[in-house]
Length: 113
Image (cartoon, rainbow, N blue to C red; front, side, top):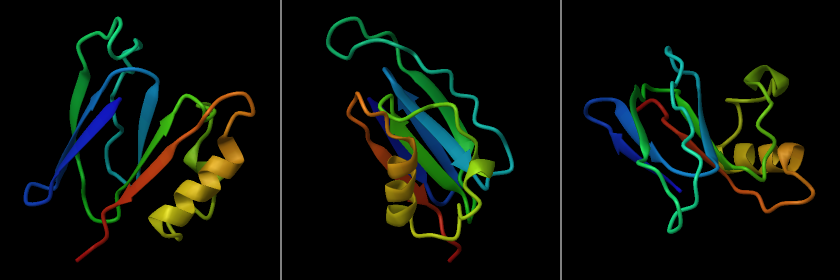
């Protein structure tokens, strides 16, 4: 389970995570330092890992479940950042989904105003 709270006036977002969900930031100036807290919500969930991070214009969050291979880099996808959030999520899901698990990809873009 992952919750993301965006704070547009402060240009920040906060992530709270438990379980097999990963978040990556594309286009940001700082690396996201979120260490996944493995566990099962409702069974043995630890305290959520929480981190606050800049959410500047052109930043894109890529969140995915463990049904998506975790060993990938943004450089593997040269089209990243040129597509809409929904197309980006769909293309990542097609490229990275495991054959033996369910998978979810969510992409959130912060477009300049």
